[in-house]
Image (cartoon, rainbow, N blue to C red; front, side):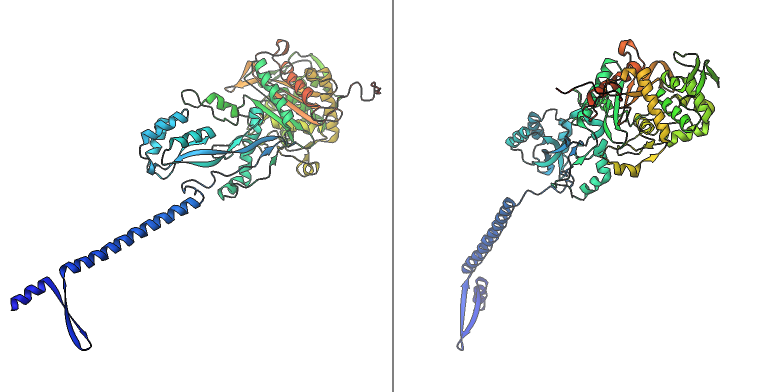
Length: 584
């Protein structure tokens, strides 16, 4: 009996219940228990699957309705905007274009080799090894190609490659190409300013706004520059043609408002296209010769400006009261000093008036004027004109002038006619403007500046009477002297040539020149300074290689074409003569 009960308990549970005082025992077989447990497990399994499907479905709906999220690895300044840049008349110089760039999530790339092969059919010059390396990096984000064309985007979409996507970006576009490249500058692929006024904008706070994410998709007020695009185009054409025609290494020019210091135009060649700041060669390397065009010789380089410095030497003598226009200096024989001989090019070998010293560009006469002032007075005067210190302006990368560590008499003598001090052509033009605008030194600017604003930044550097005398000398040389090659009928051009032996490896090359011409017009009431330079010309007008045959003709063409655009009316005959034209 006991063994029967043990076997029975091994096969079933013994349940005792009571109801209304009665005790009922119910036996549940093992098969019934397993059925119940199976139903419970099946219910749990079905509930779990339904929960998973519900969660997945909900997330898919959420993703479908949500805007595409930016990949976390992309910095917030990728699609940051930049303001348009326009000239003084509102002509567009630089603007943003909406572009698309290609990226990949390498973790989702199944076959990197296949992806590279497919993309190579759409993207020309794709770097196979670099792209493959990026796709195998197992990182969260990698750029594959920046700034695609719409057709390339459509072709890549048609390939249906998983793990790649597109990101909206901004690309900077310069409608004028190389026309004003050294003024406007350029940006990198992330739309960050690298040169010119583009870099200046970032230095003024635009870069900080980008980092804070405050420029993305926000319309920004255009930045207006002081340049006139019409005049800029003329200046750039003239210097480019001159470099080719005269077989020179480089050339440049600048047009400056003498009263406000505004730069109306500035060009330096060789130059470059800011839409393509770096050009690739067929072998995939960067064209280093093309990148040399980034160098702006007007503000970023220093040169010995030759006889243009005689303008400052004579102005110094007049301002210090050491000479007058009626003074006579002895230029009859060369000067021996410190083992050097100072002589004139095609000298007159006789005493010269101050007007003749300027007209014939006498080194001997100019040295005599500098000697009257003295070494320290000479240095202080050039410092006062801003020719010995770094120029302050918005343009980044302005070069610092060079001068002797210790000024001796021989230094003062050579500097008097433009040797021994190297300065930028732009600050030479600024100092020349002070000589003829009434005596005020006005810092140059590439932004619009009113007369009221000019008064706050300008300072007097010479007497008004000295300025009147210098206008006379400029006019005299424009009519009688080396400035005749720059004369434009009706616009009263005056100025001074400068032909200097070029310094190569610390030595003067006797057969290679650096030529310059600084001019002003109209001389009865000067409004503009124009300065031209040409580096190492092999020929010039009528076969000459001096400034009169190279730099002066450049000035003539620039003024002749741009003066009417600047509102300067031509006047013929003497200012006091009656008008000869009649209205019919």
